[in-house]
Length: 247
Ligand code: ADE
Image (cartoon, rainbow, N blue to C red; front, side):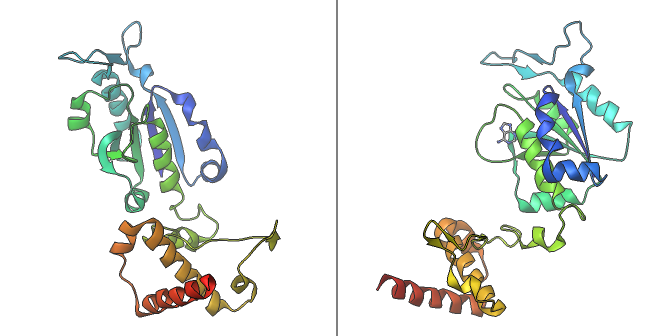
C-alpha cells in the first residue's frame, strides 16, 4: 500500500516513523510519501493560498499547486484513490478503513485554512473524508489517523492476524476489559474469573462485559447489534450478578 500525502506541513508527519506504522514502512509493507504542496507552486513566493471570492474570513488553498501535485502523482506509480480530508467529508469508520486497506495507492490531500478551492474537491478528488464532527486546524492529523487505521489492517502488519478482526468496531461492539500483572495493584484486584484458567467461563465473562459496556457507553452501537440467544442469557446473568453484588 502506498500513501501519498499532499501537505504544506511535511514536518508534521514524523509520528508515522514510530511504532507499528514505522515498522510496517521498514518492512516494505507500506510506503508513506510526503509531498510539500508548496514545491508545486510556480510563483516567486510559492503561494499556496489566497483570499476567498465573495469576501469573508480566512484564506482558501489555491487549486493550481494541488492539481499540479496530483498530475505529477498520476504520472508516477499505480492508479490511486484521491482523497480530500475535510470536515465536510463522509465519516471515517472502521468499515472505511477496511475498504481503503484493499487499495494499492491512496493520495491524501490535507486542507488548511478555510479549506481548499471547491473545484479541487469537485473535479479532482474521488472521495472526501472527515474523521469526526469537529474542526481541526488542518487535514494533517486526519491523514495520519487514516494511515494508522488502514495500515494495521494490512496483512502482515500486526503480529497476530486475528487481533485486528477481534477489535472493537470490527464487530461493532466495545471490547471487554483487559488486565495484566500485578494481580493486586494497590488493593484493586483482577476479577477472579480471569485467574481460574477455565477458557469457556472466561469467554462468556468477556462477552458479557463487552455487551454490558456497549449498552452502557454506546447505546447507539448496542441498538444495532443482533444479539444471539447466548447474549440474552449472558445479559440476564449479568443482572443477577449485579443484584448479588449490590446486596
Ligand atoms: N480538517 C479539519 N477538520 C477535519 C476533520 N474533522 N476531518 C478531516 N479533515 C479535517
